[in-house]
Amino acid sequence: MRLTIPQPQLLKTLQMVERAVNERSTLPILANVLLETKGNELTLTATDLDVGIQCRFPLAAPVEQGAVALPARKLTTVIRELPEELVTLEAKKNHTATVNCGASSFRIPGLPAEDFPALPLAGEGEGIAVSQQGLKTLITRTSHAMSVEETRFILNGSLFTTQKNDLVVVATDGRRLAVAHAALNRPAKQPLRAIIPSKTVRELGRLLQQDDGEEEVTLTPLKDNQVAFRFGPVSMVTRLIEGEFPQFEKVIPPPSKQTFSCDRQLLMNAVRRANLMTTATSQAVLFEFGPNALVVSKESAELGSAREELAIEYRGGPLTIAFNPEFWIDVLKTLDDEEITVEVAGPDRPAVIRRSDFVYLVLPMKVA
Image (tube, rainbow, N blue to C red):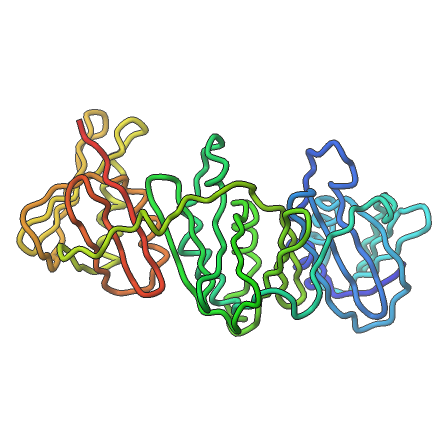
């Protein structure tokens, strides 16, 4: 196998696929990235057997066909240090590759390509389709609500499901809930309901390109409880979380007339400042509502206190609610609205941000 490729292009692709590498696995082959040449195309593949990422791109110069598995981290480190010139990579029958660029030359021992596990990728045009921009927005607005507690494995991911002509992504950790909708590019032939692991969701969010908003992503269910995402030159395969996701629709309360509206950025800044006074054992920040004013405050015996008053439009009587500030910061930084409206039905009722394409629910905290 022999190929020539610009250093920036090779480095970018390696950085995309190496996120699926597992160097701690008992299988040495999983610490490698598979490089394959066929025709005038180079394909790079990495997997930890739970998540697999493959990226293909055409080569301008003719290549000698072949395949080799090389240590992913070492190869990426070497390519990163090379100048932005043409890189020539040649693999011999003993599975050792030489990398030449300018005056630099490296020799990297590898493993047989035959030992690398095959990814069960979907075919072209299969599955449901949504724009890259749409899917990236869904992930951005919901992924922060995924649970990180290992005991609640069913919540350690996001639910991807179809409703009419929409793709819906849902995440919850039991104390907050985020539900986001995006229109499908075309009606789904079959309904979808899959729980995507949190690692896959985050990696998918990183790989999706904001500037390729109109480009299409296809999501295809596969055998053995797996799904494949395909967009541009990238394919991603993941195992699903088995189990029944909570019936989130029943948790969302009916709309409340008691609401407040304010500048999103000002609210986020006030909550961030109050959060400076929280501790691991005392996280609750108080929201005190009065006539056209909201006071965000926190008192800590260890750290001191913080208090900030915001001008708001408020419909309701005097009200004090305690919240985990992180839950507000996480959602407010994902929205692009200059002004937000929040439903606050009472001190023991969830607060709700409700839009046509997004619902966010956060439970209050109890204060002794």
